[in-house]
Length: 243
Ligand SMILES: NC(=O)c1ccc[n+]([C@@H]2O[C@H](COP(=O)([O-])OP(=O)(O)OC[C@H]3O[C@@H](n4cnc5c(N)ncnc54)[C@H](OP(=O)(O)O)[C@@H]3O)[C@@H](O)[C@H]2O)c1
Picture 1: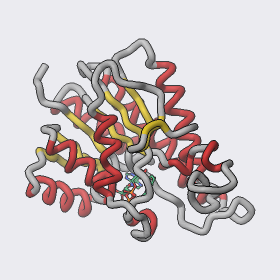
Picture 2: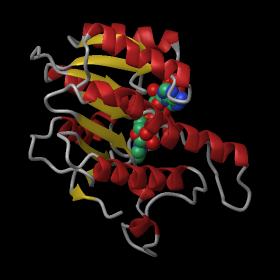
Picture 3: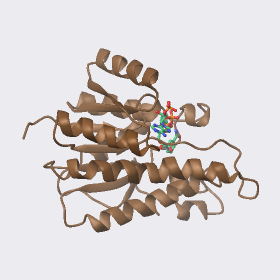
């Protein structure tokens, strides 16, 4: 097996995903840049290469079975395996988003992308991950998906605006991450959820207080865990996030 580390990051054309590509690229990973828009994909790959990253294009819409199957074939034919999968692509569905008024179509889009998209990509890539000596899966979640923090009435722990689709989609994603960890507990695959903190990206109209680069750090850490690292947990820079 080659010593190259082969990585796929979904939604890597901008924001936190792009910065994860920069960070893992700097650590020597060969980075498959997943993106749904051909124009944004080629621009990101070009920019990453200019920054010295061994990046290549992976056309990938996480909501499309066909697109995800094609992406898995690309890795299979080119490398025969995948070492690191970062499920980063995500949408909010737009704000404000109150439970009493939310459009069911918004619910479907957000869950389709943030939860089912992760399952679709993970399951397509699992046969390739199983061929890796040290497979790692990172699911980009958010502390707004923490029921513990959502139910906190005051103080710094009460996070995020009322959100009918986005926050619950991350809660759903956390629950699914845990189920994967249970099923895969007797394998060498480590799978964890990450919260990047509130970062200035397109997702929130650049209102976040951290940079996308700062947000990328926890995913980079979880993507490069040692073999005895944790699995089935939820982390931010400061440590474990309560479910
Ligand atoms: N920013 C924050 O404060 C924050 C906080 C907590 C968690 N997060 C999570 O971090 C992740 C990255 O968010 P970000 O802040 O970097 O947002 P962003 O700048 O809006 O980037 C989101 C990325 O996901 C891609 N994407 C969306 N739907 C997709 C689909 N169906 N198929 C493939 N790619 C798709 C976007 O592609 P397009 O360019 O084509 O739209 C974009 O590349 C998300 O999962 C988000 O929920 C962010």
